[in-house]
Length: 606
Image (cartoon, rainbow, N blue to C red; front, side, top):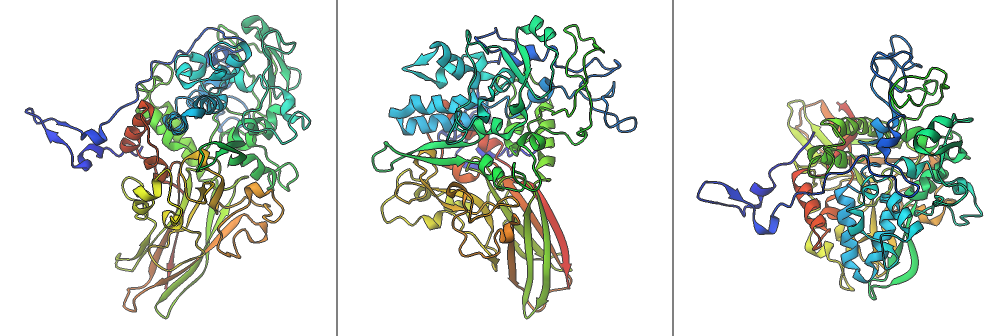
């Protein structure tokens, strides 16, 4: 686990008291999170139930019990059956240390939400309600179904803070009660997105219906225990289920009037990216979101397990075994949040729910998952006429852009060249101890982060343009989205986003730039002819590095592809009066978003 712990001492603003103890400078005073302890078994609320109550049955069998239920297999015995001594891989055990379970707890989310609300106070209710629709779906849905807990028609962050069903984030009875309307093109003629899912309210004919991916579910036990009726739902294995929140369009606020201009901005579009890839429904290698993100390395598609035990923990051998089983690890790329949750379990109210090490374990699974997303290859290595030349290719192995989703994310290439004596000949794109790059000092300047820019402001100095060739240490290939406002100036305020100034994220295989929707087309490629050439989902960077004639050969080249879930501009650009902003800034100083290594490649050149 990487923790940066020198925030106070580095400010240079601390002074010692009579006992020799120091206090932080007032401009950098640390405000740690202070969420109240989260309630695990909260009372049933409307059509919603606590995940821990679902987990009383959908849990692993006791260690040693045979047949085993929802335990990892022992590869020495059988890869396709639970082992009596295997790890607990039950839905609740996996889910409770995921980003999904902590969608509201996430300090960056909460800080960003209130930052946008304070920037646009006349729209604060709308903003918070929209954000919480997907980050606290049970509470927001219940409030609108009953009218209880609304403020002028909106569900607000202040209310979510005290509602246990809001604190639980994206939970069992949220996802599994969404109806199959997500598959209905007539219900959503412009597609399912932005939280436009449907969950029946109390009194509706389909209320208290739990949708699952298996035919002929055994329903009596669930009805008796918690009052829900399980049914088969085709949509539970369909990517459109995920798109109902992970495909998000946000309204654009005019920079000059601070009012919505009637347009929407594609804040994140992993579903559309996937649908236009080889992994999409019409692609050559179809794979759903669930198949990639609800998976464990040791669980094959042939793994067979019962899905529950009796309320007393015993195994009912007459209940059917099911396959394939989808572990609820919900892996993505946000190791920073998971490590933050581990470090601040008590401060974030999670210590009664998660044992020490649970978030760290999920972070490690996430780190391994990131390494499956991309491969690096090199060709054309030559050395002559005072120049080291080679071509580095980044191959996207995922079903969406790399990186995808929230625009704070970035990916870049760091390169170091050493001679035979170990002396550094070239070093570019190597992060410092707080995971920042040298150019971030300019990108996070007051001018670049100003909420509003002058009409003659040059935004190009505030981000790294797309590169096809690297010839100096200042040339760092960065893959990211850069937001542009209605005036064309760079912005780090989400609701000012009107058009991207740059989107050179690497598309997935099969992604045809010429035919995909305009919303997801790359921008700012600077006539890079080999970017996604042949719809292959890759980019090639041409290195032409000057080297002295006297260098000792061979040269050792190390190329590293890094990923960061929150880049420095989105940290430093986040301001506000709310304590959640201060909490996030403290956490980001103590535990900066890391530069995760996605791929590495080393080779020698004579």
